[in-house]
Length: 111
Image 1 (cartoon, helix red, strand yellow):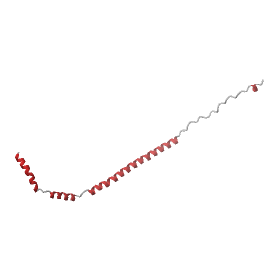
Image 2 (tube, helix red, strand yellow):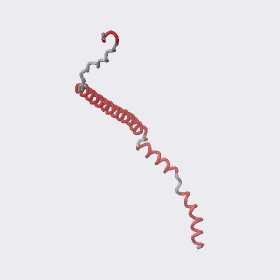
Image 3 (tube, helix red, strand yellow):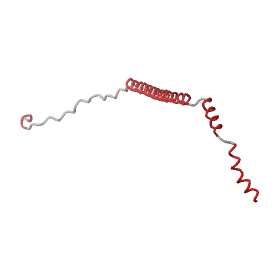
Image 4 (tube, one colour):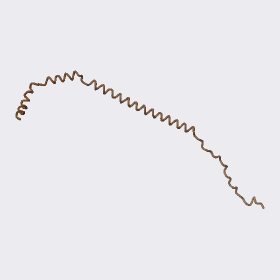
């Protein structure tokens, strides 16, 4: 009897050849590159903040100077103020004030 011809057998599936397990490579070079980039970005950001603060300070001090100079130049001089006070003093009539006190003197004597 011919066993090979009468009974067709399917070959058993053969297991796939085992592929070697590849462990992930440590990305030390990439991580140090990323950390260096982060440090550089931090330093650049810090410098930008410092420059902005310095620019704002400079701008505000620049704006404050003309205002103080303008007030000192527009202030009247001492001689002008003195002349105005002298004119006002001369315009007051002191001799006419004696009549104002007569009514008060009468009121006081009546008490």
